[in-house]
Image (cartoon, rainbow, N blue to C red; front, side, top):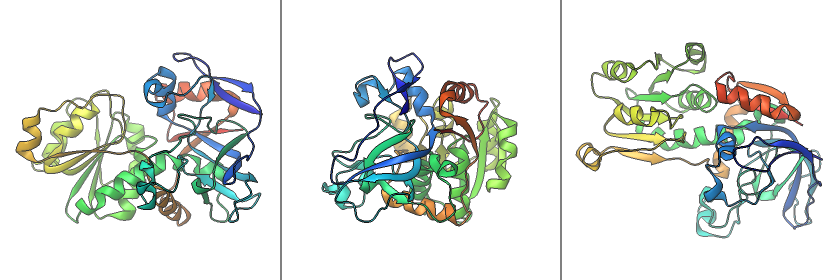
Length: 341
């Protein structure tokens, strides 16, 4: 089969032939990939940012946002049939540790992360676990929702955690209207009555946000923090969702957070540098966010099936992976790039 393989850090991946995976374990599932999402994390992987965290052996196959059709199942899998359309939770979890039994499987003590620390789904086929598979509603095409497996799940997970703080009359600032942000805005609108203020340097991206549920928009132009503070009577927002996490967004997000408010760090690449006296004197919180649970993904797919959360996508053939990466890196890509085997 064809697969997008990373051989060396700081060098772009290449498309090559590799053996097809097999369902060798009792709960193994092999999925014929219908779409694999391209994530900024894939760029960070190529840059080497994940090398010390994943400890993956190179070469390996990229791709951690995957959907497709069941191709083969292990002998203990009874709830899935060949041909079922599915989306894959990005983690392979054990089901036995305390986090798994508590429903917090995103923190499984022995999880695997295909596309990060094992072969992923930028390929014709991917092997995962039956525990990671969510069936799609009738009529949903895998390529249309593949990126919800991570980008959508991450955005939903952060919003779900923030919702108890977002009472009517509150304000939520969304940093970034791109691949994660456009999903986060829709989740906020579907799940809360908060006022949504969206920031992005790209006016074309901002112009789309009203259709997703934004109330107000602010162009990132060097004066955006002051503008948001003016819009919130000098107080800041109860919640800031930072879908950028680098290039100054991590600094600005903290500056726009109200006393006793919460700054949710979702995007990454930069550094959060906050004097401890600012944390204790204002009782503000910095909240980390990593993908989401299996149940989070099930809930997100219910919103998708109901038309409440949809994806803005651009498709590329698998062999055009580096064209897609160039578009993402340069800011030309609107929404999420989807690679089609």
